[in-house]
Amino acid sequence: MTSMRISQLAERSGVPATTLRFYESAGLLSADRNPAGYRMYGEDAVDRLAFIGAAKHLGLALEEIGELVGVWEAGACRDVKADLRPRISARLAEAEARAAELAAFTASLRGALAHLDALPDRAGRCDPECGLLAPGAGARSVSARAAGPVPASAAGPDTGHGPGSSASAPAPASGGAHGGQPVNVVLSPGRQAAGEETERWRSAPVACSLGGDGLHERTARWREAVAGATRAAVPEGLRLTLPVDRVTRVAELAAAEQQCCPFFDFRLHLDGPHLHLEVRAPADGGALLTDLFGPTA
Image 1 (cartoon, helix red, strand yellow):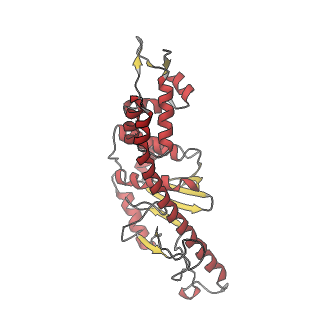
Image 2 (cartoon, rainbow, N blue to C red):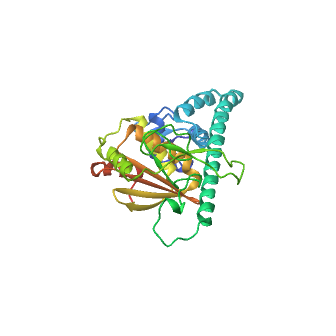
Image 3 (cartoon, rainbow, N blue to C red):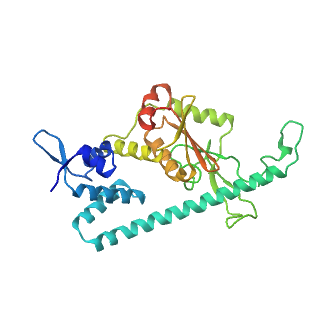
């Protein structure tokens, strides 16, 4: 059996060497050592990595992939099929639910835009009579904010209350299959609430509760989610511009990240085909921000 060093396997499989080391530490990939202490892999590692990559593409968690690899390694294809089918069905149900929520949110935004275009252009200052944000006008805010462990807009139902909490933004009475269906969106807080919310992430301890494999896995998932992003500096952080179809993955990661690293501040903004993700951290958390998301440019 041909043996490869880690650099050769990385070239053959297209998987970075850092990820290969992480897979080894997570028990997904095994390696022998030659007399000089270098990792050595057999030809079967290429097939194994292709299988892992396919499972990741389906959105399976690392723990699930480990279980599935064990079944795959046993060699019975029918067993892999039987194990994989309920996992894919569960992911499909989640994806369809999120797609419906995102479609309803899109419909509410279209209703808000139509309402805005129908209003007269007034020369005076904006006041409640303008009707710009009148009840029933559609979405209150295009910006979505990941507040604490609550998923950002379009990533799932929000059950929070208080500053930055969820409210039902009614969809327009007509305009698509989801007309009239409420959708939970995270509203941009008012000035006082925004100040209080900002203070929470600023005053949170700069420490992450994740460690070891969990930290490596989370970092790898973030790097994959923001791959190819356009980067720009913002005060105390950076803005990443991504395709809008990554909104679910990014929102889930942002919500999970604030459970272990509450000193990060995440803001998501949907802009047509683009998703703008702004990430901020206190001054003493800047190095951790760079470690997780890379440099500004």
